[in-house]
Image 1 (cartoon, rainbow, N blue to C red):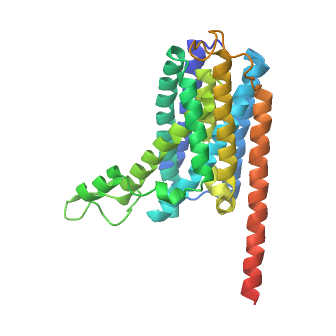
Image 2 (spheres, rainbow, N blue to C red):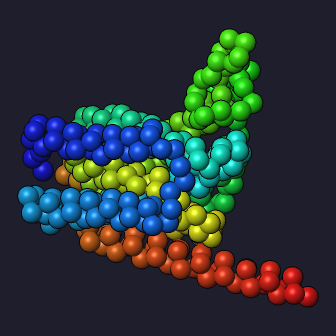
Image 3 (tube, rainbow, N blue to C red):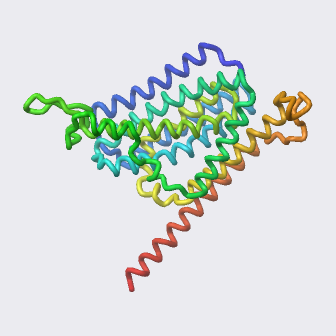
Length: 332
């Protein structure tokens, strides 16, 4: 896929403009969006992603459009999982609802920056060392196994060294004040608010999620432009999706299992493709193990959509059953 420098520049300018609009909305009027407002923005961002994929289809062909849609769907699902952790963080630090939009927006910007850096590093590694795919594949399978074991997300949020240091070394206030990071008291003392600690927690969490998401997207497409845009579109509208889903997030009890299956599938796909194409004399004859099957992008898309669909339906069904049991128990 040949992407000109002008296409990169135009894409970056457009994305920065969209983020700037989001920043202006939050900066002028911090608030909790209504369902109508959140739904409108989520629909808008999903529509943009669909239109972008159609543009890729028209300019580069169906293969690359399929890679974009598959990568976007995978990253979007991982981003929804990211929302679970954001919910835990904001609940743990008791962030007022009117400031949660600001936290989410800054968290998304941090995620974009970190993923951009990982994408650049990953693309450079892949171009120089084809064996990196084996590492990516093994890491994804390991991550999937960890998810299936049911590690509590809350455990991942144990205060890390950076948070503990900040709490110990920085002068902190007990109030979020106006959602600022730093305030000056009536006596002239400068204090950091808990908002700074929240952002440190969000930033370190974004770093962990980037470690999962970048190998996953490279398992679908090797095109840096598609990797980057799929990640950006997956993060766009995440702030509004948080408020749109509301309590539904807690009902998606099997989402982690679905994501584990998806990540394991992509990890195996990466290893099979590497075996098929890599020139590794100590493993094959120097021309790749051609018996290793290549998984087409349409099959990847079907597996991902089907897995996430089943996980969502099963989650809602279980939540409904559990709620009926609770109501029945309360009635007795």
